[in-house]
Every structure is written in C-alpha cells, then in structure tokens.
Image (cartoon, rainbow, N blue to C red):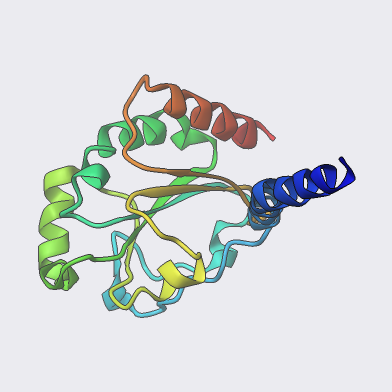
Length: 181
C-alpha cells in the first residue's frame, strides 16, 4: 500500500509540476519591464520616429506582433482599431512589431502598402531579423501585450481576435483597468 502511495505522489508530481512551473514563469514574465526596442534606425520605423521604452512611460501601450500575410494578424485589425478609438484619449497607444514570416514581407515598401490597405496608422517597428521577437520570447502571430504606465508587461493574449469575442472582452477589461489606474 505504501508503494502505491509513493508511486501516486511521484506520478502526481510529474503531472502537475510543469503546470505549476509554467504558471510561476508566466507570473514572473508579466511583471517584467518591456524590453527596449531593438531598432533605433528611422528606416525600421513606420508612422513614427524610432521609439524607446522611455517614450512610453506614463502611458498605457499595447505592443503586438504581426506579419502582413498572416490572416490571423490582419483579421484582428478591426478589433484593434476599436481599442484605439475607445482608449485613444486616455494615454493609450498601440505599437506594432512587424516580424515577417516570408522574405517578401521584409520589404518596407510592401509593408507600407499593406499598412495603407489595413488602415494601420500607429507606429510599427520592422523586426526583420526577429531580434525583438526573441527579446520578448514571442512565438505566435498575432500576440498582444498590455504594458502599464510604469513600463511593465501586465497581460498577454495570443491569436486572432474579433469584436465581441469572449476573450476580447476579457482582454478589454484588463486594458480598461490598466488605463484607469
């Protein structure tokens, strides 16, 4: 009987330890400072001069990763434009990080054309070498990060998002709370 209990506890540890470790890692991630942007070249920024983390202090920022041929990315733009309209006057700013999946997406001209098509008017940093992607330990297009007024990442959401979707509503509640702080 004792051997069965030990085996059970041993099995339970290996089943639940990854969940606990992942949760602890996520909590640490969400309280870390937004990393400094990896490009200070004017050529790598569209709709803005190069931004630094310091430029964002005092405001709430939504930093998101996308690439223009990813339909999950561009189908999220109506929702994102709604956030900009709703929170724009409250010190809120969206910043896109365009990290291309394919070679033709690395072209600034192609990106600018797609930004006009998708009506993207906020700052976008070109991350052609995946430097910022790696710095943020990002894995998916699109991924959305809420950064508070102190420059800390406080929330993350992965995937295509639409107006009225339950996960969009949850994200918006967090964003609203952070904006009101």
